[in-house]
Every structure is written in C-alpha cells, then in structure tokens.
Image (spheres, rainbow, N blue to C red):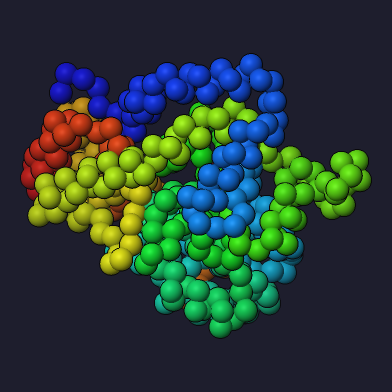
Length: 379
Ligand SMILES: *Cc1c(COP(=O)(O)O)cnc(C)c1O
C-alpha cells in the first residue's frame, strides 16, 4: 500500500459529511447558545426516536452517563455492583467513585461479553464480603450486545437494576430490541473513536422511567430544582456542548448507513480470514455495530503477528491487554468464583484490525492478505 492505512479513518467520514457539517457547526457558533442550545434538545429527541425509548438525556461523556445512573439509583458504600472485568475502566470506575464496590464477573470467550453463568458466583462473592448487591452493569463490548435475556432474568429474580453500558454498542440490536431501550437504564459515549462519535467528549443515557429521567436531568446541572438557584440535591456539571450536539445531528443522520457499511467490512473479513484465525461471531438474532473487529490468536504468537503486520503497514490494537481485576487500582475488589480465567486468557489473545465504515475494498484486501501471510510465517 502506498497510502497509510488508518485504524479508524475519521477524516474519510468528515469528507463524506461534506459542507452540511460546516454549516451546522457555523450555525451553532453564530447563534451563541453554547450551553444547552436548541441543538441539544433536538439531538436528544432524535436519539430517543432512534432507540425507541422515552427519555434520552445527553451529558458530558460516557463515564458520566454511567455515573449519573448510579447517582440516580443512590448507590453508596456497602453496595456491590456486578461488572465484567474485560472492559474499559469506566464501567467499574464509576462504582468506586460512589464508594461502592465493583464485583467482577468473567466473560464468554465467543462474544467477549459478560457470561450470565457467572452472575450467581458474583452474587455469592459480594455476600461473602458483607456487601449488598444492588445492580449489574453489562457492557456491549466491541459493538455486540450482551446476552440480555439471561442477564435480565437474573436481575429480575434478585431485585437488581441493570445498566447497559453501550458506549461501544450504540445502534446494536438484541433480538429485535435496540441498544438504549435495553436495561433499567442504558448509556453510551460519543468519544470520537466510538461508532457514533463527536469531535470531543460527549455521552448520553436512556431510560423509560420518567421519574429517574427527571432526577438525572437535575443531577447533570448541579442538582437544580425548578428554581435554578434552589438546588435540591448534590449534582455535577455534565452537559453535552451545543456544538457537539450540532455535529452529532449530522452524524446520526448517516449512522444507519455507516452501520451497514461496517457490516460489509466485517463480512469481508469473515470471508477472507475465518479459515486461518478465530474471527468474531455475532449471536443469533443480534446486530453488532462493529466498534472493533477483534480476532483471537495464539498468545505466544501475538506479538510476532503485531510486528509482522506493522512491518507491512497494517496498524492493529490490543483491547484490552489487562483485565480490570488485575489492574493496580482494581485488584483489591472481589472477583466471582475462583478467579476469571477467560478474561485473563483472552487479554493475551485479542488483536483488533482496522475497522470503520470507509475502509475501501482494495485496502481491506491488502490487510487480509497481510494477515494471512503473517499468520502463515509465524507458524
Ligand atoms: C469508552 C467507554 C466508556 C466511557 O466513555 P467516555 O466517553 O470516554 O467517558 C465506558 N464504557 C465503555 C465500555 C467504553 O468503551
């Protein structure tokens, strides 16, 4: 390849968005409603329609989105929240923010998502530590929805709420239900590299419950009451900028198209690579938005494969090299059962390939050939 291959090509998307995006940005700049301008409300309405859920509330980032949900649920010290360990730090971080305890559960190696079979073990681990389990945060890792039927049954049976962390999976579908509409509450992130990203930080959360929605709308603006200078609860400052909302309106308009383009890229990888390596599989009746296209390779050959691909000009990434329960800040928290063997193993096997809606066929053919050659040469 003469051209540099991007892992995620946001510049190609920017070209595709064209002058409409310039106009949207300049309108927001010239109108001067920089905080909570009309674009924020318009975007929230569009998100609510897209997810088919009553309340969509924007906020400053995907981490705050989860944090606001936990604040609304009054999570406090002594509470345990069950979370996967093979995820980005935010999922557990927000639980610890509030002085509560994340309890880690293992994943299913085929989907990389929370293994519902581990939930009972997590509940027992929390109990052993004298904690009261109040909820579960599932993650739609790499764009694929978690296995919600058994997770929801477990939550119902134990009186727990469920937050679906769909930072990577916004737009995914689980058996006819769209992300945002799944869980007691759901959250997403608009960090630029996420499937639906803005040009800075941004996030949103979703709930069908009007009372919870009202509390969260207050929490995100310092706990305001109906009178702006009578704050009725301790809140935070977590708003989506008007400018980012203006950008996201343009991006949401082409998002379905982009999800379809991502699926084509995933299908081409599957056709070209499934006979030489372990390719990611989507559960039946589900749609992934392919935030990442993640292979599993032999742990002892992974570095050689990364180096070989790099030499050929193919960028790769390892999400995630270490599970949370083995990271410095999180190793003190309980894990379900006798450790989390799947999370610990896949961290050494995962390898993500370039994935974005604008990956051209010729570039992808080059990547696939490079992957096949490299895997063959490292034996
Ligand atoms: C990115 C991400 C978040 C946090 O989003 P930010 O907008 O970066 O705060 C939370 N959970 C998961 C699984 C993520 O990938």
